[in-house]
Image 1 (cartoon, each protein chain N blue to C red):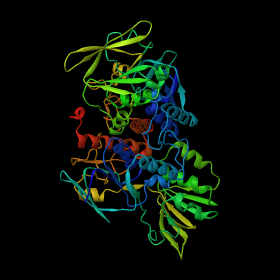
Image 2 (cartoon, rainbow over the protein chains, first blue to last red; image 1 turned 120 degrees about the vertical axis):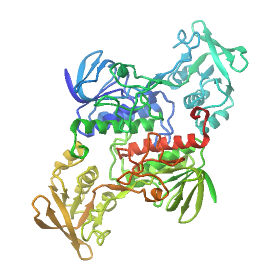
Image 3 (spheres, rainbow over the protein chains, first blue to last red; image 1 turned 90 degrees about the horizontal axis):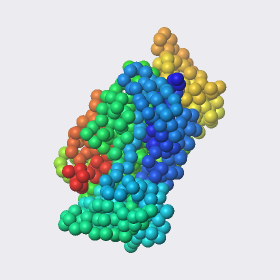
Image 4 (cartoon, chains in turn blue, cyan; image 1 turned 180 degrees about the vertical axis):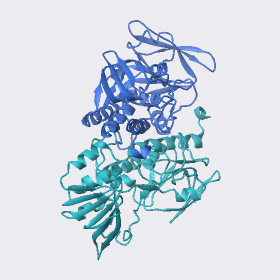
Length: 310
Length: 310
């Protein structure tokens, strides 16, 4: 069994930022991620609001952060999924698909996953026209008719990105206004190949080998209609990946987010959380970074108990 | 009188990050700073722990953040010092040396200032050998004998920087261990022209037109000694610039830091605070950025009261 000072579960912006600070503090640090290091920002076509970079692709920023952590000596195990956590004792145990590790402190930075809309056909056509990531799958639909479902920042960013590829983009939003930055909304309204359907929901996604159409319902009138499309990009928000931590006794709020205080402490001693998995009110790259840094320095203080924290 | 949605007082990492998000949210945003935009990071020789940049000079990062905010359309008034704040009503008034402005919300991001050690001669020789900023004044002392006072991250970083310029650096620390990242301490101990005096304090700084020597006292034995030096760099921490806000009714803690909650709210409605001026437990570039972003989005929600925040 491998022994570490701190194990960071999840290698997104929060986890990588925590790793940078943990390593520089002299902690023996392991980072685990079920996917490749980088987290959800890797899916963003463009990031224009991480201070210091006027504009950078999400993939490039994710790579920079992972390189940064590795350059300082962080041990990052990609593609190694955690299966169980034992967090209640003084020594924490993390079991993965391949091994078992112990640590004195744990940082949970498992982020969130894309929410589904629950439409008929959504699961069936996933990967055959139904997608949750514009930058991953948008290029497959060059010159095609695309639907984007949602009304937040992610839906607007995805629409802007895909409007440069697809012939026609229809935004389906169940409300009559966006919940997005004004500058995004303005950019979107200026696009000539973008059409917005307010108060509308997707009832069913239909097709053969691939998506061919969607059935829409106007939620103010109840009227349904058919729209011929080649792809459906779902951007209706995220839900936290807090199941494993919660099963190990970490307290979550009514929406599933891990409850933290200003020190990124959870209810369990020696267990910290950072980033999109927490109940912090803002979910942005820059706030995940700040939380990761705080979690690492608080984990350091917890493990080493330096004179100024006694 | 100029009317704004939000006025951000202080253009350091927190204030500039707040500006980026406030502008992108469509708020009419004014940033005021008594100095040039950039804040205290501009004084750092090197920053190696802002995720995304493996290594960058503080001045360059400060410039990138200011350029980022300006590129998005933020109005930054450099060299315009705030003289009074009136924060209790629904409309907030900010008076500067040159004008008066009103706003619906205020973000206080005034940072902190360097603490003095209180040694005899410290004020007298400021600017004539006594400095609080290694990167600003270090190059004046190439090949000279320099003292660095302090034992935290800033003292270690300053020592590392100056050891590449000065012939001999003596670190004076009142305790017998550093309060700094282990990797910094290791780098410092590897330097052959750096000498560390533990349990030692500077009693007096002496000279003629410029610094010539310091009188040291060993605080474990009470013994004093003389050390011939050309410069004294003081790096003993910071104190928050919260006086103006406090005078306007913003609550501070026992050390003078503005009390905030997880939403960066202060005790006054519509008044937010972010960065080194707050009582957040960590004072780092990355945490100031996260706090600035949160403050801007919470100020937006306060002003516009969008449906999802009602």
